[in-house]
Length: 304
Image 1: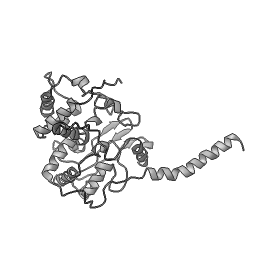
Image 2: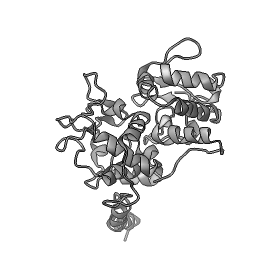
Image 3: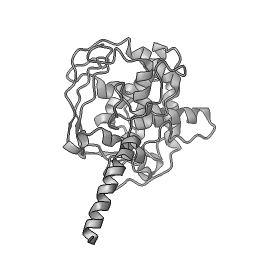
Image 4: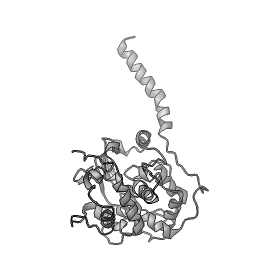
């Protein structure tokens, strides 16, 4: 047998026996069981805070209207892989998540797995939400169920053909997703450590303020150092001390409340929408965020 035929035979064997292994490895794995006892009774008022710091309305509010609590989805999010459209997460039982249990919401946030058992695309930042506290999941679910029901399902994602195969996300998760892992660095100061939870989990700040590799995963060495935005049409600023080290803790907290920067400017673009959310947080949480950001390691801004 020629070397060429031997090589082809080996490749065919690898495909034949490797496919079942790949299928098993990329299986969606929800973290919570149905009616999971680890998820306590939720409180809607506490869930409102989780909703705001999580920025749920920023992506899921129905476009073209002013009510940020009408979560009909449909905003177009451009990316190198195509256009993603966040779904309807209003409590409508037909078009939204009105029939979701707390465990369903928990598996979406912690595992990136839908109630139907398929992978969510990481345009939904479950890679950060994964470290959410169990009580916050229950509280968020309780709050979402109090919001207006919105009819209508969003259009499908408009992606390149290969990226429409959701099973491939299982391979992406093997490379870049660590369930229940948090990037927060604690130092024992309760205010700082609260800020770490808000910034690194619920607030998912690094999801915007970092540079990504060709597969869409954050490059660790660029966390919080800014870079091109997801649509490659702008630049997200560096928020490490390398760039804003001269900002005081109080000035960062003020920016999160009013949008005003220390140099008498105002934040713009998507950050203005973030401020709509953070302005509704308790002052202590804005200070906690500011303290954590002040304590980030200084990193140079990546070049395009």
